[in-house]
Length: 483
Image (cartoon, rainbow, N blue to C red; front, side):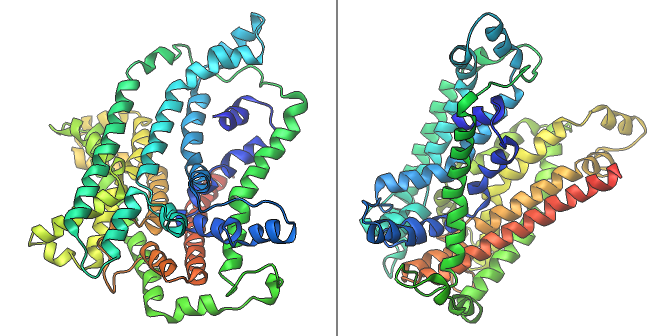
C-alpha cells in the first residue's frame, strides 16, 4: 500500500517507470522466479555463499517459513499494488486538498483520507493474497521440501506422486478441505466488504492539485523502491540465466569459466523436455485464441443481450479463478474418469489438459473484456438494431470490432498465463502430455537445477515475446494513427 501511495500521490522521481517495474513478479513465470531466487539466495546460492563464506557474515535461510513468506510476499506484491493503485487513481484528490487547505499536513491527509479510502482495497487484497498462499504449490515444493515444510497443496502433490499407486480418495478429501477453506475466506470477504460504500466519495474523481512533497526523503525512497525491484526481480532473473548456462555455480570459480551449453543441449535432446516445450506452446497458442473467442461471446451475452440467464454468466465466468488450481485438477480427474464419453478421450490426452487450463483461467479474459465492453456506448447497438440488424449481426459487425484492442490484450494475457500455469494439470499429466510447469517440478525433484533453470528461462522468453508482439502491435497502431 505504501508503494502504491508513493507512486500515485507523491513526487517520487521515476515513478512512471517504478510502477510497471513493481509488476515484474506478475510477468515472470512463478517457477522461474523461484528458481532464480534459489540459485542466488538459497542455502547454497551464489550470493549466499559470497555473503557467508567470503565475507564471513551471518546468512539468511531461504528454505524456512520466514524465507518462503518473503518470497511469497514478492510474488503476490503485484496483487496488492494493482488493487490499491486502482483506488488511488480513481479517487477524489480534492478531499486531500481540502484537508491541506484546513491546515492539515501529510500525516493528517494519510489518516483522515487515504487510509479510509484504501481500507476496502487493503482488505480485499489481503484476503485474496491469503487465499493464493493457501493453494500455492511451487514455493513449498522447491523451498519447503528440503526443510521438511509442507503446505496443503504440496502435501497432496506428494501423496499423488510419491508412491507407485496414488490414493485418489485422500487427495480428493484434501482438495475438498482446501476448497472449503478458500470458500470460507471468500465468504468472510463478502461480509467484511458489506459497508465499503461508506469509503467511496460522491464527488467527481480528480487528481490532487499537487503531489505530496517528500522533501529530503524523495531520493532515498526512489533508491529504495528501485533497489527493491533490482533485488527481488532483476538479479534473480540474471541468476536464472546464469544457472541455465553452468553445471555448477560456485564462488570458487568465476562464472564465465563454467559456461557451457549442457543444460540447453539436454532440453533439445531429451524427448521429455523437448516435448514439454512443444506441448506448452501448443496449448498456449490454441487455448488463448479459443478461450478469448468463447469468453467474448459470453461477455456480450451477459451484458448486451436479452438472454434469460444472462445475470448468472458473470458469476460463472469469475468463479473458476477463485477455485484453487489443485481442486480444479482433482475435479477434472474424476470428471474424465466417471464420464465415459468424452472423458475416455480427454483423460490421457493433451486436449484434457487444455480444457482444464482454459476453464481455470477464462476469468482473466473476462476481467479484461467486461470493463472494455462497459465503456462502449450501447446506443451503437440500438442504432444497428433499429436498422434491422439482429443480435449476432450487431455483435459481429459493431461490438466485436470495437473490442479489438481489448481482445488482443486478453489474448496476450491468456497466452502468458497458459504458458506459466501448471497447478490444474499436475494430476492429469501423463507420458507424452508433459507441460513446462509439470516437467520442471519433476526435473527439480531429480536434483537437476540446471535444466530446470533453462526451462524457466524458456518460459520467460516466451512471455517476453508474447508481450512484445501483443503490446508492440498496439503501440505501432497508435503511432500510425497519430502520424
